[in-house]
Amino acid sequence: MAELGGDANTPESGRRRGPGVPARASAPREAPDGSPEAAALLGEQLRALRERTGLVMRAFVSKYGYSQTTISRYERGGRLPRKAYLDCLLGEVSRRGNPSLAPEDVQATYDLYRKALGPAGGRNALLLEVFELELRKEQLSVQTTGLYTEAAAYKARVGELEARLAAGGAARPGEEEQLRRQGAELARRRTELEAEQRTVQQRINRLEQLLPLDDEDTALAPPPPPVAPPFVPPGNTAAAGGAGSASRSGSSAPDWPSRSRCSP
Image 1 (cartoon, rainbow, N blue to C red):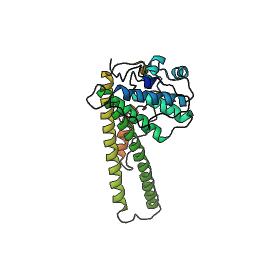
Image 2: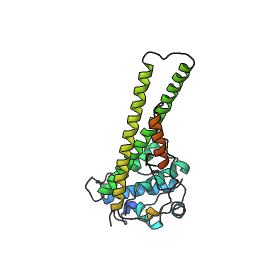
Image 3: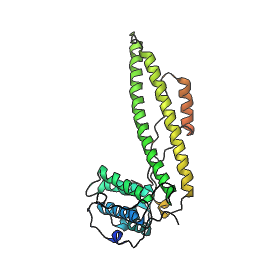
Image 4: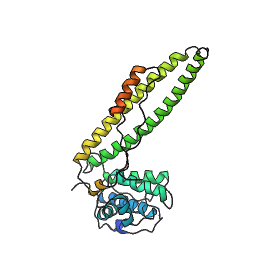
């Protein structure tokens, strides 16, 4: 059985904390990376986050599909969860937490999780690599959102130029060439982002097959997120036709699943 983080009977991990009491992420307590003590500190953070939601364990189990035994082991430091469970917890705190979720809560939780996983090449090496890849996937998603924002501004500029030309006006010196280069650059960046995303997701899929099963795999899954249409520079009708047909077949749409198995 892999992913064991620490002793379920660790005294520190057995202490109870009332709802709303902040986790001890910022407390001056150190534990070796990958140690049972590090897993116990993570477990305290997970329990504190759940209690901040106001949900007792049974209610959390009913809502998200994790077993009570599994959650108990997470909170005692006896097993390390997947990142999806952390996202369940953080998402629930962001919706109903008391106190509400702060950026430092997310960072503290991820830092404790990474410390509990231990070093690369340790006993949790596969789980650590999956965690790092999922963080990278989220970064790529943010970059893609920014790219489509840039593409929308680019298309607006192209539309303004086309309207001006149709009204008998003229392009400013170098304007058409500048737009052509900008369109080519946006298309290149989109291709690179999608290629890296596919590589990251394929690696995650392979690693998931090597990790031991846990009943967190039965947690509820949300509907697939909406996929932004592929960006095609205006005037490139051949590329537009190809992209459209590829999009309908599903072969060129970004293959980015939701970052969490949890339903909202």
